[in-house]
Length: 144
Image (cartoon, rainbow, N blue to C red; front, side, top):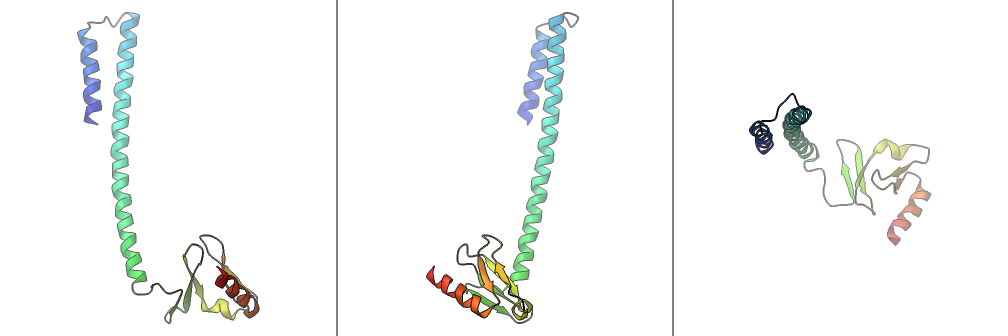
């Protein structure tokens, strides 16, 4: 950005060195163009500083979020398709298509209505709480 400032300063010096009469049409035009370029360069520099600040802030949030995820999921996830967490009454199923872990509440299994759980990533059915439908799903997953 310093290069931008120095280039605008060079233009100002070049215009002053040409000894343009600012009362002439050409002199007015060049003076106004240089003023516009100067204002634009200042705006660009300000925007770049704000973007740099936002990037730093976003990186800080990302680091904090990664730490929270590590703390929250610590020891809970492994490579198995079915994970049981006794404290949370949850279990998870890995989607066979995209390998996304889908967490399912124990209460959904006891629901009298048939409930199909979809993968939030690819929308494939990964769990059905009906025994007959679950057997059909299990056969379909085995075929893949």
